[in-house]
Length: 156
Image (tube, rainbow, N blue to C red; front, side):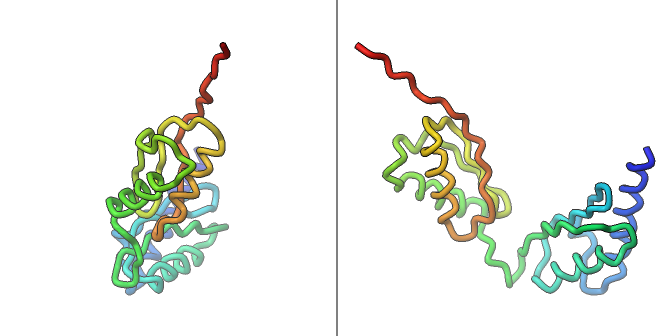
C-alpha cells in the first residue's frame, strides 16, 4: 500500500508544479506515476509547452524519469487527423504488391498511432503491413494486432 501512496503523492506533486507554471494548462496534461517514473499524456499547443511540462515534472523530488507522451495539437503540430491517417495507411496497404487481399486488414488511428488487425498469412506479410503504415507521414507508431495463420496447402 505504501508504494501506491507514493505513486499518488508523486503524481499530485507533479500536478501542483504544473499548476504553478504560467505557460501550462494543467487540465490538458494527465499525470501518472509508477515507482518514480512519471508519464505525461494529453495534448499541448507547442513544443515549448511540451518541454516545459517535462521540465516541471523533473523538478519534483522522487521523480527518477519522465515519459513525455504529450501530443502537439496546436499551430506547430504536424499532426494529422485520425481519419486522414487511416485512409492513407489503407491506401498504402492496398497499393503494396506483396499484400494480397488487403481488405483482410483493419486500420485504426489514434493521435498518430496506427493499430492494424486482421489475419496475416506469413511473417513477411506482417512486416509489409507495418512498413506500409510507417511510410505514411504523421504516423508516430504502429501496433501490430494481426493474428498469424499460415494456410495449409494440401497435396494431391
